[in-house]
Amino acid sequence: MHERYSYLCLYPFLPAASEYVKESGLTIDHMISSASARIRAKERVIEAIRTGCVQRPFIADDMQAQMELLSYPFARILVSCINDPYLVRRYALAEAKGAYRRIIEDLNTGTGMDTIHKLAGDLGIHADISTDHVLVPFTDYLQLAVNLRDKRWKLVNRSLVRGKVKLNVNEFVRLLQEAIYGRVIKGLPLDVPEEICNSLRAHIEQIKEELARGRPKRDEFRAHSGADPDSFPPCIRNILRNLNEGVNIPHSARFAVTAFLLNAGLSVEEVIELYRNSPDFNETMTRYQVEHIAGVRSGTRYTAPSCATMRTYGNCVGKDELCDRIAHPLSYYRLKLKRRAKKPDS
Ligand code: SF4
Image (cartoon, rainbow, N blue to C red; front, side):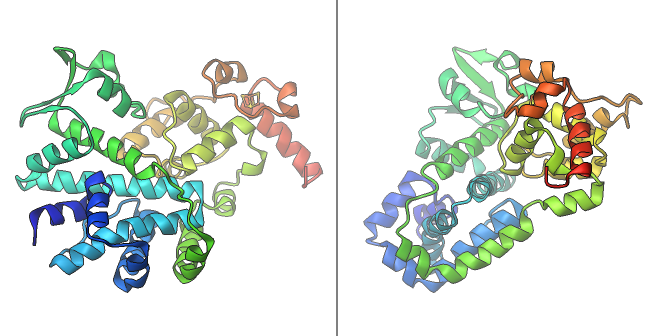
């Protein structure tokens, strides 16, 4: 199989991959008439919903490589026909995570440096790459690391060499994941003609069913924890909505929602589950932080921040009339529970 072709079908979101598809004369009609590309496209989206990661495909020959290449734009069409913000983010993240894993696997087998060089060039990142470290221009770094919340990504915690930010190779691959996420999500949802969406109805229905199963369910949430999400204050509902849609949220919001939910009766395990869609989800780290706030490690259980603190950090979002009567999100919750006990529809 041609080397460039096998590389592009593993990284089909690259500009070079769409040029390749155009040059080959492949059109949207080819995609729609290719049953195997349709099935693989549906699999890409279903894998994204189920596991949050599009796995490395098995490619034996040029035919399979072409099908794999076509399945990517087709998956974008399927996601666009469904037009659900949660699915758009989850799909883009799953493609980016899949690419990250493929690069790390290649690094472990000794072929990854070549891939990193090619990907950086194809994604327009001007980095000096060696096997020891990578130097990234300051401005590129700021753009790529903007959504990474961990302290180690803050510029004050990085070394600068001749105006460039120094990273180890694995950290640079993590930045490539960010660049890939940006590339995949760009333009989504596409403006797909209705007749095309109609012709794909069977696939779309299957994806929607999977989506309904995969999306965190409010009723289960209520049944397990006894908490009533409909009575949560607007600020907490907003943070939960962002978590659910895979938006990377700041530390202050993570602390606020975690402390609030633990005090509202959720268990440590239930709170950890809510973080699973986060772009940077790391179970060990999340468990450590949630257990710390719950007092499992320190013996001190933290309470949620007051409304004044929420305002200071920009986390007071969507105030309503009940907010004028309270000074703490947990007071809002208790008051709303009382009201709803008297009048269930309030
Ligand atoms: S006023 Fe308090 S409870 Fe209401 S949205 Fe703001 S922080 Fe949340």
